[in-house]
Length: 267
Image 1 (tube, one colour):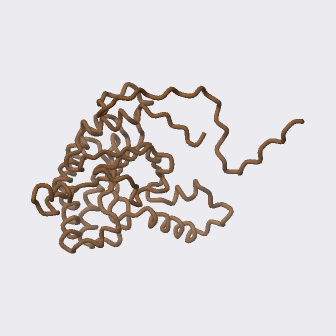
Image 2 (spheres, one colour):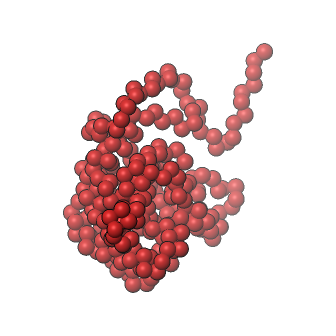
Image 3 (cartoon, helix red, strand yellow):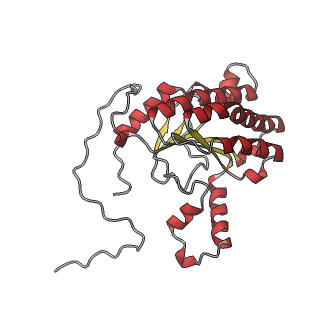
């Protein structure tokens, strides 16, 4: 007796073709050796990084917390040039979460100043490299002077076409979803027309591909409320390296690991 076709949700993904199971990569027994990517298929279109470890890095050296954050900014400068060379089109960096407001006034004010100074001082170099900068988060909650200064600098990078750099500042994934729902409600979208695409189009990252690879430095193994909708099928890569020490070799190791993985998307 023939079995009736399975009733699938209307928004379920198409049935995948059956393919032979891929063989597991050999055990390396040690650190991954970074290698240049051999083809565009092995290159993630969007890499997101949770930059963790600035404060631990500073404490290990007997420095103040703001010194650790300053070292983290220097790491961003160096890494951006390498990301452009690697041809990754979108990079998202988790710079300041809304939960970070719980830190001391001195640290929060220092972080605002570092962001403002870094973007302003690097605007010319970002333009030269073809980097377009976008800030993700509730920017209206930032001090007025910070918003004004950063906004002017960001406008100058609008023509960048080699790398889309997203800086998540005063950002939280759940807050982003709340804001997306509010946006949909305010626009009058009827409930039956709200689907995954409608929500994606209402997020801060509208128009950008979802992350293929999420890197977390510092050894912790959690997303910490970062791009939680967009990272549903991202590959996760955690390394022990503290963010100020994360350089081009560490980035290449993450890309090499990504290239070895088989992505199934639940199929």
